[in-house]
Image 1 (cartoon, rainbow, N blue to C red):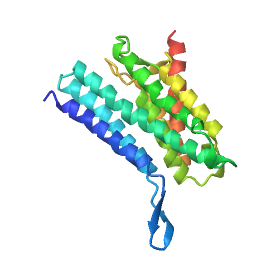
Image 2: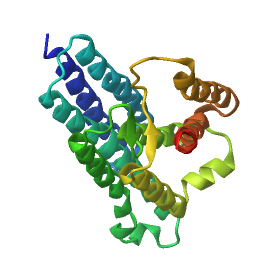
Image 3: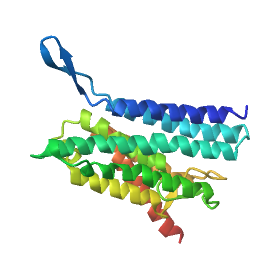
Image 4: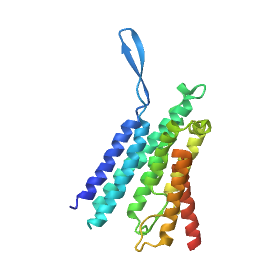
Length: 254
């Protein structure tokens, strides 16, 4: 029984590993035939990485839920959970950012000859995520709230961008997601929010009351309304609402 939560954690890791493969499917490959060089179209798979990360987030919730339900929390489970989260919500989002930066840089006049240095900032995300997870593992004060944005929230934000890009008809949205400077801003902002000590809400309460649940109910309403109006753009909007509400509630309490 005590290994059931760990099995869920490993399933989270498996989703992350498969998502890495999906992100690296860029949608085009080269093949050689007897008639010469031929371009063969391969379906782009990055959207499936987003779906896998959504599944990983659900599984990530389940492992903690079952650990508490079965009363089998362990230090090993805590460490294993962080290792899985780093892959699913750190490495995969970093690769998503890498691919979007690659697409952005390729649009420049000399994009095909551009230095790899333009793409390396994408890996600030997994580095920031690793720092945040390590700090969380040794911090004994984050029982009912987080210091800094949790890595699954940051990972799901990045995972929404492929779904937004390949399912929107808005040219301004596509232009923003193909702008390397916008991506540098996203990378730096999300990384800062993870490594910061800003107080963030967590659904961990000893007594569930309407007052404590209200911000989460409000975010759910925002998510539903924006999803109806703007589709996958609701994910960044809900992420912003989460950060803003966390900061406002902390100021109110102090």
